[in-house]
Length: 444
Ligand code: IMP
Image (cartoon, rainbow, N blue to C red; front, side):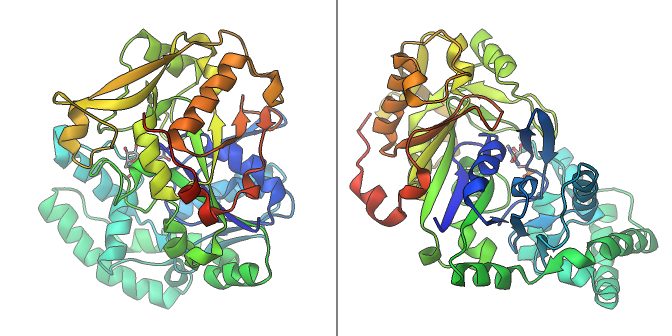
């Protein structure tokens, strides 16, 4: 410590919620820096399940300060719902939860546009969560966004909404054939939200800077995963924000020198929701078994997740994109039901074998995985609490992944509960400086 990033290394849903919750015991402050309520974290504490979409799961720890930074997009109705359910469950939020005044607000026309655009794309649809994420980020880049600071200033909000809604209604009605939105209805609804959220809106960047200056222990919590990154993922089948660790700098307002290390959350197999290429996808019985055993259904939309084998080519790319210094492995317990366990170590693309993740979508769609088989351990590992408790075959699987990625497996999660966690190496003991340069991944 003091400042580490925790990010997903695949297509999201790696189990970041549980890990951030688990590692928060070492932190004082948790900062979310991108994304919106397209994310969904399921956290189980003392057998009680909480699903959070926006508010960092750090809020479930007494005394932890949670900051939702500039780079996020916020749907006020969802935020208020989460606040209400947290307060009802006895978690205090006042004075320790802050939303950036520069975060952008998801408006009803963003949600309407998200759905209409997906319909318009037809067979090329992205499979978005329909939460208005893409259109909200598009407005931000187009300098047509409404920020939290605007929302809580009634006069500013009224003026901005009036001007923007006229334009948006034109697009909805004339271009997409949708029903226009009524100014009064939107204004009254959002004025109500503003009243409830005003005490939580703050200059998040200053809060982060003060924490950095005071050497406080900070976790930057990423949403989604590396392959959903707007610049580096499988575009256009991506989300609209920077999901790789570099997004922390822009989204939270710190420099790269303020980040000490990057903890990558890696699922022991691969899943993906929505459309887009997925080389190791299993459309057979084994994929079905993984989905059932791993309960692979979206926390946000309930959609069944596509399941497949561990892809070392994709993960090596993700490790480099993020400067990953430590691996936290999640859900290997699900693999207890399969034997052999396969790892993709190369792609065969139109007859040539490559160890590089292709940037072309067409190449990725044609990639046939080359697998290495590892023997399955065929036993329940959910009660293991130390490295030595693990069957040798499971240890070998983790060691092989370390060899392929050149990054140590520090922590292993063997179930949803906080206690179902194996601490092998302290992920906060590895600093970014030199690690990625020093460890050379073994060519597959
Ligand atoms: P959007 O973020 O709603 O625009 O959706 C774009 C793509 O990202 C779709 O394929 C979604 O399924 C995917 N996506 C967005 N958020 C998450 C997440 O938290 N986990 C997994 N997939 C996500």
